[in-house]
Length: 103
Image (cartoon, rainbow, N blue to C red):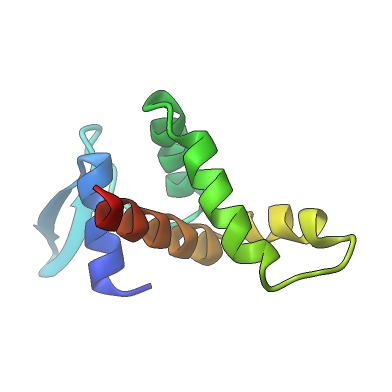
């Protein structure tokens, strides 16, 4: 995931970029450092749901995924794919980029 991807997700989430021990970190309102791990992915899922955009996210992500896979286990593989933080955030940043292009 690129820094641009992280920034895009952080803007969507309302996370601030802060300097902590001479390194830059994204910080949500609760003051916890964002590591873009599965815990942070859970926060993103909650925010997308809260905004009523979960269906749009899943439709976009599934359409990109299913174009690559044609077998009957594609849906099971898809769910497992999103349980990896790197994959989830890559899908989220791709969805946000597509969404911005369509606005």
